[in-house]
Image (cartoon, rainbow, N blue to C red):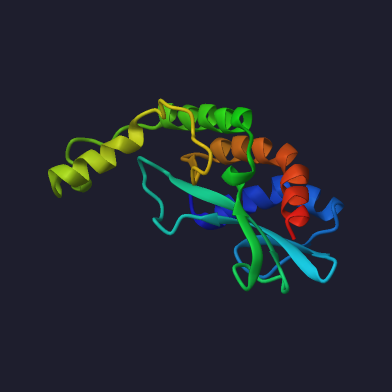
Length: 174
């Protein structure tokens, strides 16, 4: 999936909540912003710069920022990723979704170039196909993996009910 496809899908699924909650589309990535007193709360989704892999897929992250300007990454008074705002139970739900994505992946053929760089690179690459066995610890930097549109939709449905609480938590920290 191209990043533009991921952003379009997330926009269609998350956008209505942001609009109904007084957010407007911001300029970079897939981002929304609204005033919060003298500050702005900005929320964005960012697809990994690692790019797309036909076998392992890709991943994205969701970030929240409280800053003077509604600009992604600029002058943040407070900036947090989704995982830092999740409860133990929510992180466990994320792990289940992640493992569902991983279990749907097709491993690359033995001729895949990445498997022939070095033993270290082969081990690193094949680890992408291993289920996440242990619960995510508090503070874990969670990137949401996907390989197909339905994976992105599952993540959007996971994120959607969390948005009000995440936004409130970030705003309260300001």
